[in-house]
Image 1 (cartoon, rainbow, N blue to C red):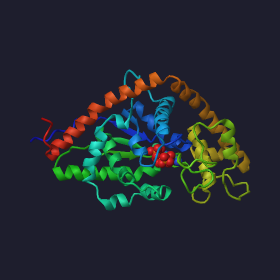
Image 2 (image 1 turned 90 degrees about the horizontal axis):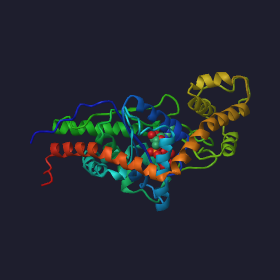
Image 3 (image 1 turned 180 degrees about the vertical axis):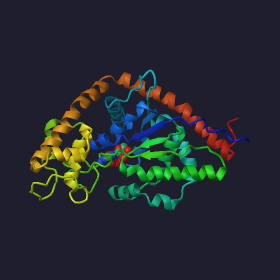
Length: 346
Ligand code: AQP
């Protein structure tokens, strides 16, 4: 059988987020904002990874509500499915069945040892010690399938996901090499210059995470008062000198986190934010961070509520998105199966 050729690859972006809770400020600065900037230059696929979210137990009502709510955050953050020149595609992972099928196939191109080395698996095994399921272990394989199905050239993710995208590259190269084909396009990850790892305000050694809500975690749904309270209590250090506010991530992780947050909200660098606050005390830094976050959150929250009030329109976007994604995913799956010698459906 002749191998089926990889179509000419155009710049294509693909990335996703789990509907596992209310997204955090970390998800916004490290994910939504940088990922959506690719719409201007790339064929863009954004999705909601519900199959990934079930690797930790989700209450059915929460999974259902969170899936629409995350779709509404994407749209509020600027995803534009109506752009006449280059509409972005937004869809739900489970609406395109090829993800699971390719994930199964790629399991056979992934070594146990590779998955055992994944930092997220190690962290989540501690976080969900009662439920270390096979899906949690195989999470990066399904993620590789997600990426490869759309011939993605760029995968914008936060710092924590870099290792998974590197594994995806290894799997794609291994498959192509084994069959002597160019079945998969090998993607690259893109880490945003700032906001790649927004840290927990109470413990700047940890990333801010939607499954670890609390005083250290700013949620996109927080009121201005909640945001102010969380920043007021943010952990810094005991430095009181005139140089206390400076950007030194190793030496002063709490302060660096606040500067990165201000910078991420205002499209500047953390060094620029530090210069503007030079000579002031930490109270001023915390107040400035809260003000920057609130100014960014208020229009975002209003836009998200607008989408949630019109679920019919929201569902239409998701339905059209799946219809656009499915043929692309199915074509890749057909190429994979042809390369491997599967008998096509008769
Ligand atoms: N604190 C963060 N700073 C920068 N980027 C972040 N991301 C997550 N937290 C931060 C990025 O957001 C994208 C979507 O994340 P996800 O929902 O797929 O899962 P995650 O990385 O495990 O994020 P959470 O918030 O910690 O979710 P839970 O608690 O459900 O596991 C990814 O690109 C991620 O890098």
